[in-house]
Length: 163
Image 1 (tube, rainbow, N blue to C red):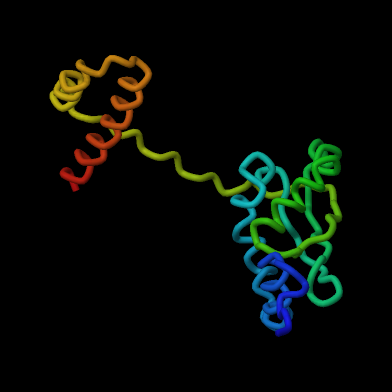
Image 2: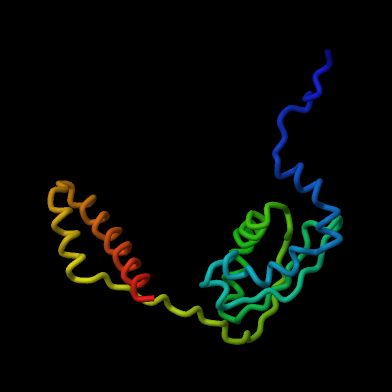
């Protein structure tokens, strides 16, 4: 009997990348989503000071060069962070989407600020009941964590009742 798995185990990422390459080349899903997902990929600190401009695809549709417009002060720092940014992009998409960055210095438009979430407060009577229930918990760290959790649940329930 021959062993069909003679090559051993293979990473699923390598196999899925090979299987989806024709689709990615044809559809170009990555190119559109890198712009919409930029904040999630690089985080708010970097996303507020740099924006992706375009992607020049590499051979076989993988490992392209991402052109990024960056504010002057961040350019040198981003040059040093390039390996981490590329790793974040590639791990976000699950394949080798970007092999390098090309930085372009210049002003960027003010980013859209995310609306701060409204701070919800629980009723004082509910909090008093919660404190009474937690009085028997001996561990102060556990009591604090349970109180914070209970407060968030009570505040959320209060906001749902008001709606």
